[in-house]
Image 1: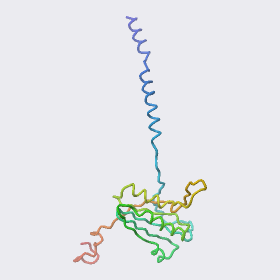
Image 2: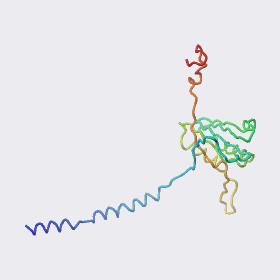
Image 3: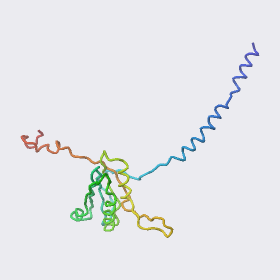
Image 4: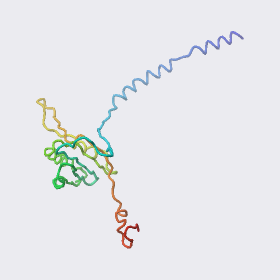
Length: 194
């Protein structure tokens, strides 16, 4: 009886780790191969912050902030600034229609380059994408707003210059026509909702 107990104890102490080691030997190369094909693309952005009371930092002279509304069928570009006359800002604002499903990203880049030449300290672009905009179209537009090819090195490598590198995402809020009518609905007394 004691021999059977001792034999059972010896068998329990000797674990066969060969199958577990074989499993790890097979898994490690697959994990390493999977890591080699995995790359992450990052578009650095930020979100708007609300700071009550404003900022103590002095404003940058002659800088503008661009706001880009990206719809599936058009691009609208407007500008704002505390230092620039609103009439000049209105002249900078423009819009383009999408032609044959292609975003007019090159026209947008050319216009932003002309604004950057006029206001070189400008760096911020507020992007307001439509909710049903395909991701690839958004990325193609953002690529054109961040930098542009300004030349080449003697070896032939391209040289890129910053355009509007600070990208801030915000949400496009569309006004509901029923809410816009609100107090102005016919038959409603002044100051009361219909």
